[in-house]
Image (cartoon, rainbow, N blue to C red):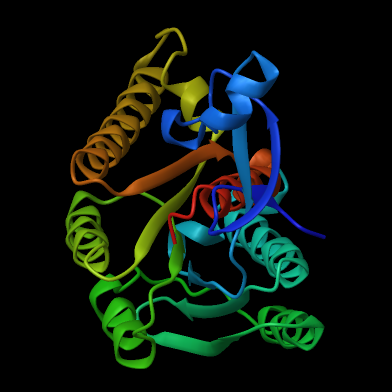
Amino acid sequence: TRLLGSGSEFERLREYSPDDEYRRINWKATARRGKPVTMEYQTERSQNLVALLDVGRMMRAPVGDVAKMDYAINAVLLLTYVAAQKGDRVGVLTFADEVQSWLTPRSGKAQFHRMLELLYRVQGQPVEPDYNRAFSYFAARHSRRALVLVFTDLTASISNEALLAQMTRLRRTHLPLLVTMRDPTVERMAHQPIVDSASLHQRTVAETLLRERDVTLEALHRRGVLTLDVPADKLSIAVIERYLAIKARMMI
């Protein structure tokens, strides 16, 4: 299956649409046909994708009946499958306070089975993630430019500061994408009416969590880091859609 986008190999001419880049207009064809015509290209193959998967304390927390970590694992597996169809290489690093596992990016159907076997064995840990250790481990083992998807949870402000620094540093070589899941329970608690001291406490805690989360996401945006913040049950499809959009725009 070929993916059409703005890659380097010419694919076809088609009618211009408002979302097309101005520089993609074929002026000769436009003059012949009497209406704007766009050049479309086939995107390049064999790009690198690496998932950095946090399996620490907060990723063990459930959204409904499913842990955030399990939602992330499903998204990584689907990403590996789709990327294999596109000829891309996918790898994964799992970590909590220490790195648990590392799978070098490879392409092909066999990589999906390696990924499945590795992620099946992953166990969540009741500890905070050490972003500095995980990112240093990754940097020492993979230097080629890649789309790096960091699946984690934004909670403690101290951890968020470490994550912010590492994502910004990662941007020098790679294309980092922070992937987080919104918890409808926390959002509901942040807007619940205050009827007693317990509801006041719940609302205050929820509002603080959401505020710190928004501060970190905004700081990443200002530094040019991509983010994907979606409901947990929409995660897998959202990850695939973002990957395909990034690939089509030749951002990797």
